[in-house]
Image 1 (spheres, rainbow, N blue to C red):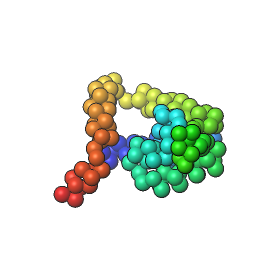
Image 2: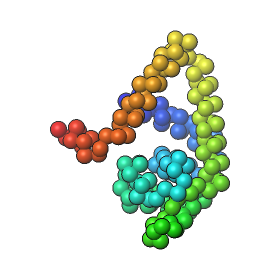
Image 3: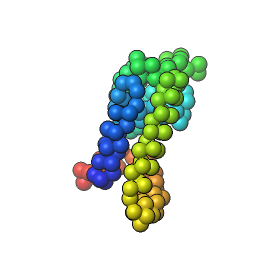
Length: 148
């Protein structure tokens, strides 16, 4: 797993150099992606989706609102709650990030042998299944597994 984390870090570092605007943390980008997937999501639901504490996500919301990437809107069903929406700047930033990431990874893959590329393609379904399983693991189950 450390290899995958290293790969993600390298891609993030390389993309930060190419993308305009302030550097975003991994958590900020993850929140933008959650809001993109579920426009109008609330802070509590976003926190559950990200497996983070609500106050941590609230802090990310304030940072991204200040940066011009998120818009908070009062939830008409519960005036105490807020709905989160991406701004046009966020849509643009995520699109540019995806395009740059695709180009960067595509260029790197072109330097690998056909056998290495085929191995990566064959591994993708198993990695998707692993991610799906990990996303459904209850945090108390994960803590129990770590602490025995």
